[in-house]
Length: 102
Image 1 (tube, one colour):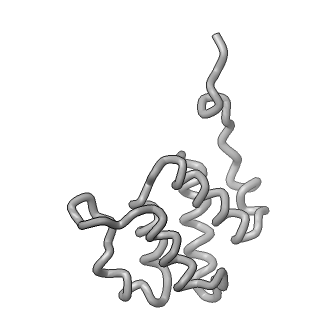
Image 2: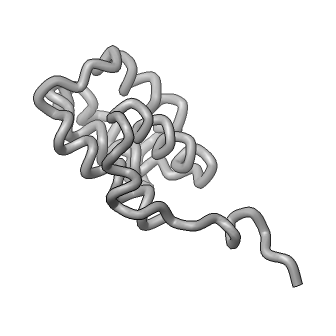
């Protein structure tokens, strides 16, 4: 019996992930979350950003109206401009944690 792509995927170690740049971690975590349609992940990450209070109306909870993965990614880009500044350690930890758990 052959394994599917998801089943044959090996989970990278913490050391392997930690060696990557924050941007590479973000790309990998966002790609995985998009594949899984995991809006909750995006909203949890956005809460770590300095302007997160602007996203309070779009909290990503299951009963809220309409937030999508694409909206979360657009909001991420608006808030960060890919500059992580003081939030880098928290974001790296969130990205690594997500990649190791999923």
